[in-house]
Image 1 (cartoon, rainbow, N blue to C red):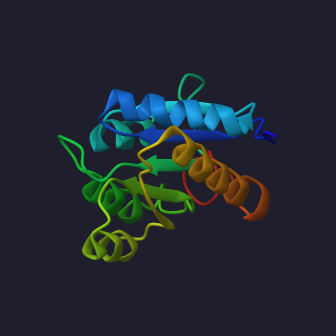
Image 2 (image 1 turned 90 degrees about the horizontal axis):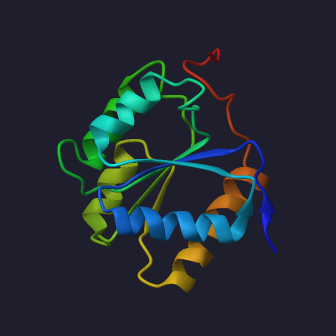
Length: 152
């Protein structure tokens, strides 16, 4: 059974094209109507978030890899939380292959809403994305989409 995510936007920030494809396939398997966008690093993430438009809709949820070139996920998360026009982005789920307790602690200290270890199998990724989509799009209340606390 798929979850109706019509009108919802997820932005996947990951430098590995295979991992982005892996996430896209899992999200598509669990959610119908979901708009999945992708960027390859923290700089591209911030550019996307700071300049939304018809071709770049502001996301409801960001899935952020921590280990990326140019600007890693920790740095990008710190920038998002420091920016008054972005910090309301209440749903930043951080995922990575790292399970080091220090990574988890640091991720939450920087203001992430969740830490998700990156699954290594298709079934594991589908299960993880189902939980993410169910929680953020059917259980949790999200702030209005757009720049700043007042919206676009």
